[in-house]
Structures are given as C-alpha cells and as structure tokens.
Image (cartoon, rainbow, N blue to C red):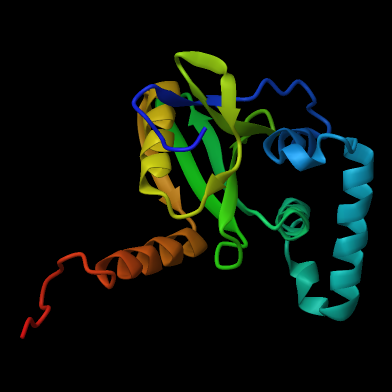
Length: 194
C-alpha cells in the first residue's frame, strides 16, 4: 500500500472466534503467522511466559492478556497497539482505553481492538475505498497520518459521547513522541535562535 491517502480507511476484521480471539486477530494482523494455527501460537506464547516467569518472578504480577500480548509483541518483533472499547449504555458513553506493548523496541506495529463487553479481540487494518482487496495490517510506528485515520475510524464506529482514557504507558509514549517532534526542527516555544 505505501503512503496513506484520502481514500484509505480503517476496518475491523471479522473475527468469529470468541475463545481464542486474541490469537485469531494476531494471526490476521501479522501475516507471517497465517500458516500457524492458534494452538501452536498459544503453545509458543505460553512457553515464553513460563520461561520469563522462571527468570523474573515479578512477571507473575501481570494478568494473562498482558503476558500474552507482551509475548506476541516480542515473538513478532512488532509494537502492538490495543484500543479497548467499553460501551456504557446507561450513560450513552463509549470509553476507549489505549494500551501499548513493546513501544520503545520495534519500528513496525499492528493495531487491535478489544471489545470489553464481548471479551473479544479484533485486528484493525487499512483498505483503500477504491480497491478494497488492497489491505495493510502492519504499519510504521509513530505515524501521525495513521493515528489520525484510526481516530476517524473510532469516532465513526462509536459516535456516542466518547471518553478517551490513556494508560500511563500511552501518556509516556505521547509525551516522548511530542518531544521527538519538537526536537527535530519543528518550531516550539522558548527556543533561542542565534
């Protein structure tokens, strides 16, 4: 696909596998894993988690999804961005939380959606409106055009009053991303020019 254009938009993968939705979504997003079934990926992930917990007792403090996502990111050498969706029907609100796995390590990423009500993961991908068969699931990290496209998708799919909640990891990432932009020649306040 290449450059993001006005005819590109995000979509959610059709994932009917509720029991192993994380692995199904991951296999869709990381096309190198399509030849391996969910059980094989899960075994590799569980072996990696067991090894990590033997070497680092603090690793047991994380919940299973966090451990699995961290292991998947390490295995695939991809940053994994998760947007968790929780619809609050009484207040007509959608709460969107952001989580990132392995943000400082890899240069490419995938995006996933986690529906908290259904307890199900979905891969997110970009396709071109003019050629829907042309899809992209792996993206360069720190790309403003992709972030904007994702926000447009979330606003379209969840149009009620939406409340965004950022995890500490996400806020730290955004802060350092901002610093990176401002230190790369973009104008910012209090800069002394000689």
